[in-house]
Length: 78
Picture 1 (cartoon, rainbow, N blue to C red):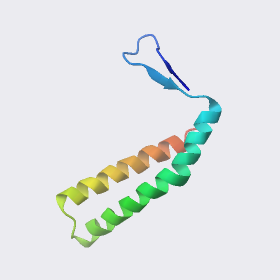
Picture 2 (cartoon, helix red, strand yellow):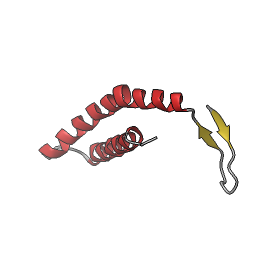
Picture 3 (spheres, rainbow, N blue to C red):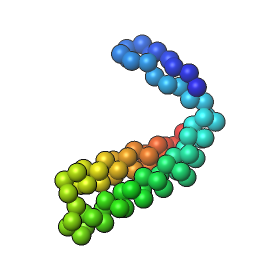
């Protein structure tokens, strides 16, 4: 893993080897996703029951976005 600078990019980027990508995918798929999914389910249930506050709805949306992001990383075809 190393930070690289690409011509035309304003910021540095993180480059990962294939083994590091596979390790990251495993961590995201097994640990992080289940933790975030549990939080999302909690707030989704509150939302579905009509008892969620605005803050709880915001948290539900945040966790939904995180799940989508994790799924997009897991589903990358590398």
